[in-house]
Amino acid sequence: MIRSELILRLTEQYPSLTHENATRVVDAIFGEITDALACGDRVEVRGFGAFWTTERRARWGNLTMISR
Image 1 (cartoon, rainbow, N blue to C red):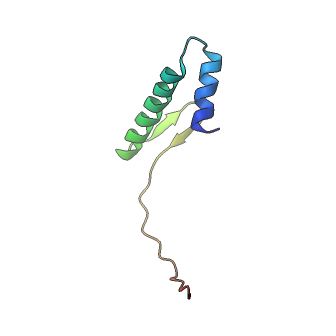
Image 2: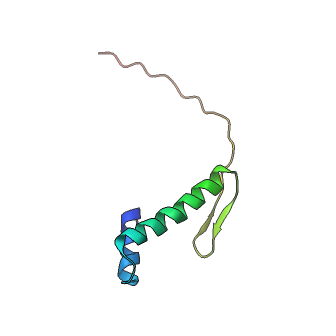
């Protein structure tokens, strides 16, 4: 499911909720999750999943030269 499908489902399940307000709700929820993760917090949505960030060292790949 993508963001637009989530907004559509919300407006179908709650007919009094306009598309604009559903968009604001979804943006607010994702914004709060993003902000919490950016601060290093763990986010848990019961029945859905848990999200957190970790620090890893950089990966180094091989340089591939492309001739023209």
